Every structure is written in structure tokens, then in C-alpha cells.
Length: 145
Ligand code: MC0
Image (cartoon, rainbow, N blue to C red; front, side, top):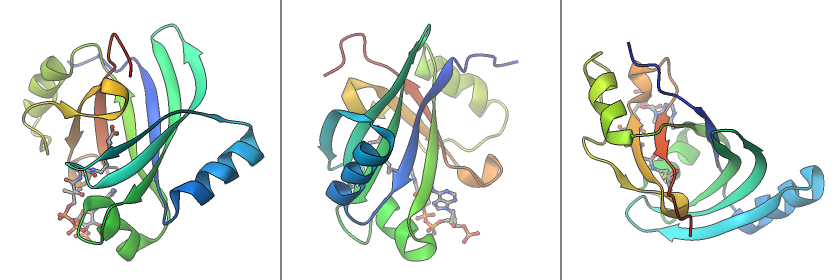
């Protein structure tokens, strides 16, 4: 059995206005922005706000603004409005995790790891096979950007 989830790496939250939501999380929860990136391949402008550090790494709130309507987050916002878009779990080895989880007949949206926030290697699992939750596996970079 796969037993390799090491932490909640981040909760991804879809929003219409990234700057507005960053200001809300800063002023309401006192969170601090750890990184900001535009990820063209994923169709998002995003920010990671640091929440806590644990023995197996850090956890974040990830705020996601779509780059356009025909992107994963753009479609999600049109259908469901703002809110939790996905949960990202930490793993030590994302390729090994994909192999083990794929063998359980969970559909892999990424057969191979892709580039994620802060230099991480990431891969998504289909929400329909994970109880309606879009699920991301995150292998943090040894040398975060
Ligand atoms: C769609 N669905 C979701 C969902 N998005 N369910 C739960 N959570 C979500 N986030 C459901 C829809 O309601 C629909 O169900 C069904 O899945 C098909 O959705 P669709 O709107 O027709 O869209 P598709 O099929 O074109 O794409 C959905 C899919 C896609 C999840 C496959 O969004 C995808 O490949 N996502 C992975 C990449 C991604 O999300 N990138 C953005 C974050 P019904 O029942 O209505 O049929 S990038 C990121 O986060 C990076 C930067 C990082 O963390 O480092």
C-alpha cells in the first residue's frame, strides 16, 4: 500500500483577483507571501503564503488567479465560483507516488511530473477518482526559488 503522504503542502484557492485576496490573507490571518509566479503551462498567476513549518517541510495557502477563462482555474471559477480548488500533499518522490497510486486505478492527470510552485515537481490526480477533490502530489525542491 502507498503510505507516502508526508504533509499537507498547500491548499489551492481559486480567486478572481489575486492582489485583493493576498491583501485579505495578510490582513486577516497575518500570513506572509513566500513566492509569486506566473505558470503559463498551468494557466495561472499564483502566490504561496507561508502557514507553518513541520518536520517534513512547510505548508502554504496557494492563491490562484486564472490567466484566462479557458484554463482549469478559469473554468472552475465560472462553474463554482471562488473557493477551494485543490489540495496538495507532500511526497518524497512524486514519480514513485504516481506509479503506486496509478496502480490503484486512480486516473493520473499527469503521467509525468510537471513544474510547480517554488521549483517543486507536481502531478495531479483526477477529482472524480478522489471523492470530488482535485488532488496534487508535491515533491518540494531541495532548493526552493
Ligand atoms: C473540475 N472538476 C473539479 C475540479 N475541476 N472537481 C473538483 N475540484 C476541481 N478543481 C470537475 C467538474 O466539476 C466536472 O464535474 C469534471 O470535473 C470535469 O470538469 P470540466 O470543468 O469539464 O473540466 P475538464 O474536464 O476540462 O478539466 C478538469 C480537470 C482539469 C480537473 C481534469 O482542471 C485539470 O487537469 N486540472 C489539473 C491542473 C490544474 O488544475 N492546474 C491549475 C492549478 P461534473 O460532475 O460537472 O462533470 S496549477 C497549480 O496549482 C500549480 C501552479 C502548483 O500547485 O504548483
